[in-house]
Length: 201
Image (cartoon, rainbow, N blue to C red; front, side, top):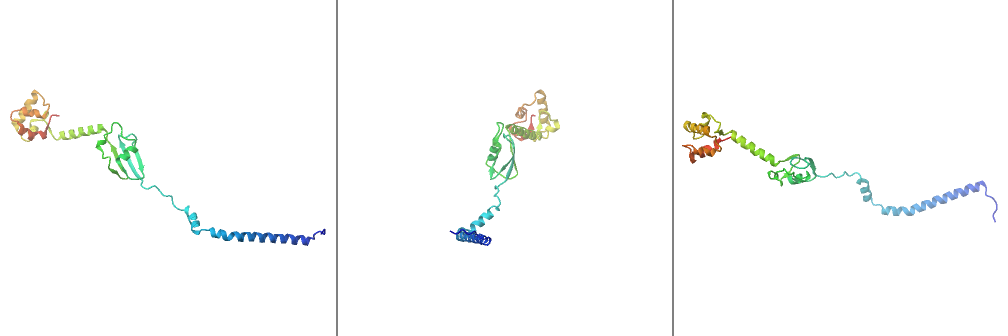
């Protein structure tokens, strides 16, 4: 057997050779794996992976803002991402209240951005009708309060007829404009000329 100890020089040489063999083995291993890795590499796929994070997030289309008020359960401002109609907005706002009067709305109408929808109540309809009636009556002559001169402004009414109207109301105020036909000289034909210009309140 070889029992002679290694000299320092021989030890250094052995370490150097071992290092060289390790580097050669490492290089040979990488050389065998390199071509396979290159075959599996897809430039298009890599490009897609690299740029996917740079793509902007798609935003929801639409952005229609609608303000709904009146006789709905949850009035307020609502945003919609697609085209809507009046009924859609009402449903989003919780639906009609018991006092709502939907007959005054076109529930099938399309709603535009920045629109304001007011759902009227039944009480509003009554008030509106009363307001229209009052406005109309303001243009008419009240046969219960008008002066002799004002009564003569009624078509077909002269001084004598106006005096008869005054005399009759002193005995009993007129309850309806048709009471005029009870006066002498006012028949159906003359009343037709007068009726659109007179009122009793």
